[in-house]
Image (tube, rainbow, N blue to C red; front, side, top):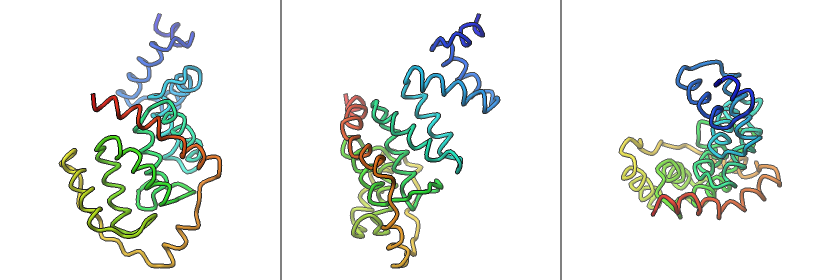
Length: 200
């Protein structure tokens, strides 16, 4: 019956199969297929987020993953905004072809404005500390680090950055496609919507 429901693209059955597949560390292609149905057919934001994160961590599909995260964010899934910021940040571990420190910081600040989300605070602190995407501001970096640690005590120390002027200049010239920038700019309300719910 469950197989029939999944093959009929019944969303609750698909979500059960996604959870089961993820817990069992099952076939990644099956998981991607199931997430794709939930994301594309039903526009289910958590599935869009999960699929976006999987695609983002593969160099060949990273741009598609970023676009999927944008769609999740536009539907009010605030953590997708943080993930987009991580993708764009030149100081994150995510390999993404269009690094843009200014856009990354803007996304983190949108989230921080609504809630003390620890990852957004920490990643923004790193950018302020290194002076990427903004004027270096060690005081603000420490403030954000402390707020991040209050929300999550496992947040590490700020890394020591040696960012040469020519590297900073190169990073400034990298920009995401114009369509992505326009979509990023329109995320403010989506971020507000999801994190406003957390405050209640």
